[in-house]
Image (cartoon, rainbow, N blue to C red; front, top):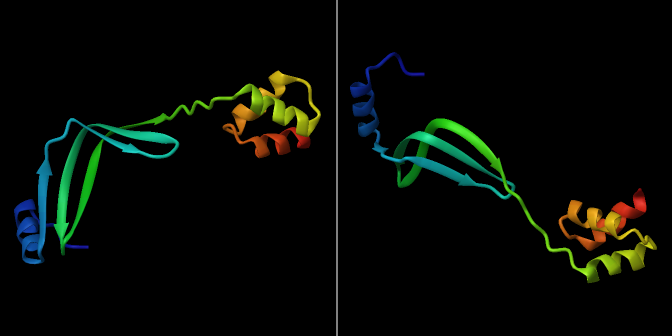
Length: 114
């Protein structure tokens, strides 16, 4: 770790090493993942350019939002699972399909295992 340096001295040292930092004005940062979004409100964003690579340092008020994935379950899907499992309870089949996000093979295995 470096000794206690004031910000100006630190910036000069970084500049000599070829590292450039830029403060960016942003009102909100959203990182979109497959299953959720990470939202950073009132962010402090610093762009760091070093050896041709640009990275970002972000801090702020963080919250996470789960993504709702809606799957269309058709009557054909329900009938196919019913035929393969021998289960007549269409509501139970629909719940299995929703749980498996519409994956018919996985729903059949789930129903056969329960």
